[in-house]
Length: 128
Figure 1 (cartoon, one colour):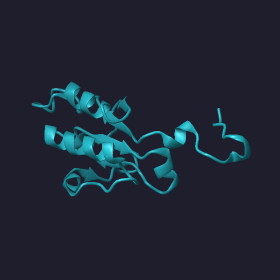
Figure 2 (cartoon, one colour; figure 1 turned 120 degrees about the vertical axis):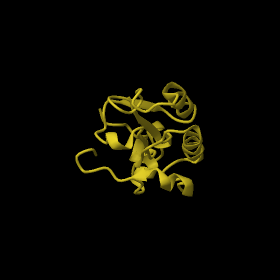
Figure 3 (spheres, one colour; figure 1 turned 90 degrees about the horizontal axis):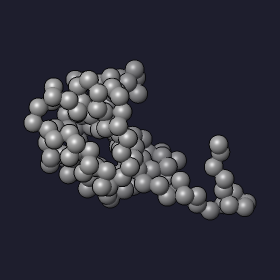
Figure 4 (cartoon, one colour; figure 1 turned 180 degrees about the vertical axis):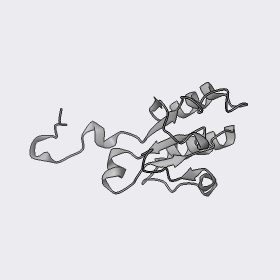
């Protein structure tokens, strides 16, 4: 169903003001005992305090477990922002850095903190 805009097509809709969203991979490797020492439930809960979180089946980048994808808000995406893929997110400090970035607006709204460059990767076309 297409989104309805106010008369004349101008003005924001609720979807325009929606925050960025987060996807966490929780399948064969991510979110499993294969990545020991990570409180996977706490990681998801912490991120969900900042933005909507969707749990995904395998994103097909198992060598990067735990994978988190931060998707830009609709407005940021329309302005050219793209999802940011983060891999090897296996410590609470990295989760906190992601949460802070998302709280600030995420891709296309707030600059990605330099520390997250250590986690950013480009998935193969097959995974996107």
